[in-house]
Length: 161
Image (cartoon, rainbow, N blue to C red; front, side, top):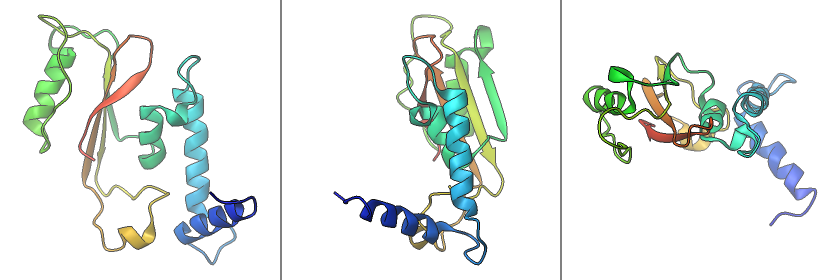
């Protein structure tokens, strides 16, 4: 456990190491991180659920920013049901879809969202440059969030991360 003063020094060193332009006064990685945390708290936080930065959607948003594409169904039915989207992901993605168990017979009508990031996806603003040096950027990331209880608390149920 760090003592006061050591904590501040650790955080200063942490963000200094991630500053993409250390010769400037502004640390763009820290600014991006702070802006994303504020957005996540504003958009993904709910009474009874907590701050948005601790939600699954908030954590993904903080790491990667806004997705390039969003597919969602609040009132799924027919071929827009959770069962259908899981089958589609099973066919199109390299990673198997596990842990998303269908509910009931017929269409699974739990609300869901799929976030897709494609192209040259930048590393998260908090990525450790020592660990990520030489790592290739992801070309496609897919995240499936499911609102299990129908109260707006979307949980991450699948990702290609």
